[in-house]
Image 1 (cartoon, rainbow, N blue to C red):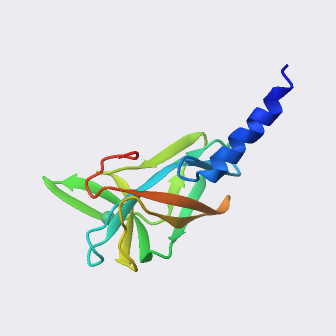
Image 2: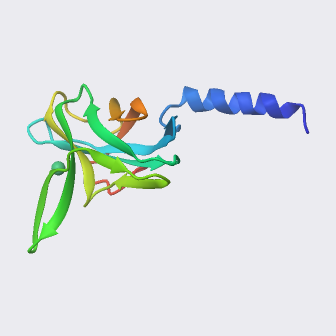
Length: 155
Ligand SMILES: [Cu+2]
């Protein structure tokens, strides 16, 4: 075992914390919050959307009960679906994260709808969002903002 390894690890963790946009997953209890991201908003009159994957490595389900962020006065988890050829969406309420499972919020399906925007979301920026879980408690994540038409992170 090399003596250099611990210092290499330290350097890695230092770098990871120095560049929060690269530290894409946040662990709290049994949950891992992966790759949060958002689309830039079109001004402030229309809602914006944010996406994230929540992985549960525990033996019991957890529930996402709420979301808080300073950029939106009314953040809600929505589900988009096609009904009779028409795209509809609405709030899903408390969202279960199954034991040993994961839930992905992505364009075309589940998303965090950031309603009543308090500031425009500008490409290249980021904002802080707090996910509130029944068991794991509150988790703060940093959400990078990509282009208006981004279909996934890193765009
Ligand atoms: Cu929505």
